[in-house]
Length: 592
Image (cartoon, rainbow, N blue to C red; front, side, top):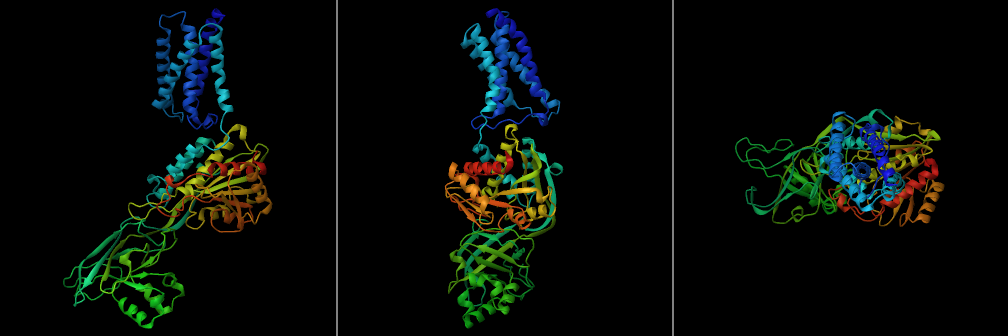
């Protein structure tokens, strides 16, 4: 047996070397899909495994022929690993030369030699070698059926990083995100539904790309009416203390030095030029509106450069105010609406005045013997015909390739607010994108190939008014009548309180099946049906007659459209459950 083992070791070493070279020098696009492991990447384990087999076989061949076979084999494996990394780089195979791969090769070879030495001699060595040869098959069979939560968190972290600039329309944030997602789709081996997965379209969008400064000062006017300052001062932070309203214009409202012919630097008609003018705060609320003397004082005060503080909902409902008051509000340089929470959004147009939302602060409340003044500078830019895109990929069905199930999620968010503040958008909607990619990973595996085709759509410009999904419905890349069902994924980073299904009350039979799956498998604590709502990208499809659900989780972090929607705030308590529920629901519709 010992002689036979040494005789077979040489041919087996050469055979395994040939297999290794084929695997490592095959272009990336021709490689099969690899399973996702949680604790260790499959690629790292594969490198170590194949070199462990090679080292073991080479040791069996070299042991009776060389004085120091282990050292010789280990050195040879290191040199071979280095050569492979150089070849991968120079042959432009779409695969990357990485020192970590060489490290995995060397560690695998060392482990292989140690295992052979431990295993002993003769038939046991051969048995160990045969067991090694069987490892790749067993590893494939152990591919996880659920999502890889660690990978999902990495996806969310990447999309919510500062590099993506809030996935908005300043500094190419959404284009950076789209490039990242194209790479993910390409690595999964999904077929593009459009050139380079990209369906371009344009939009108008208001942005705040530059200076954004708000300074409040508590001053004490003297008898001449010229402010003498020495009170409290506050510089408010964009995103933390205030935000610009989505359609706000830009401009500046600042104090002007007192000298002949000086003018305040404001976006407002010129005022008397022979004295210093301090832009001040004027207050409007329901009491002022309903008290004639107070309203008359407000009208007088707003003839000078000022910003109007809208203190309650009555004052903030501008379209319901008397027409003369509406016209006066429209004429002032800036308005500041006091709100309990800062919730940003986007607009496709721009107003002529600066409009802010601010959190409550004592300097925003009127004081009988103090003049509250303001310095405000805001840069706003309305970008017209900005080109953005949807991303679209498909896994062709094995039995019904012309029948489609669609999984969708929007990847865009709110972008930036000033020069240094951005909205991460971890829950909205990096979490939904992460779940879509986990489902794509599942169906891209050969053993999970769907019976009907599964389309994966990543929409742009959802936050600007469902523009990407509306464009797709108007310019579909697959026939809308051939879509069996669409499942839209948005806000899936929590789940402590279960999930809601928009359109669950519209498609009652489909929701009954979904609820039954959840009841059997206990995926989520609770599942609630909701009626129609135009609150995500499912809506344009529903309007076009495509059966669609919008799934979102509840509980956990309350951050929404603000700077606190960060990856660390997400529990992902319902992520795995939402994955299982979505997978089983799609499988029941023909995805398996």
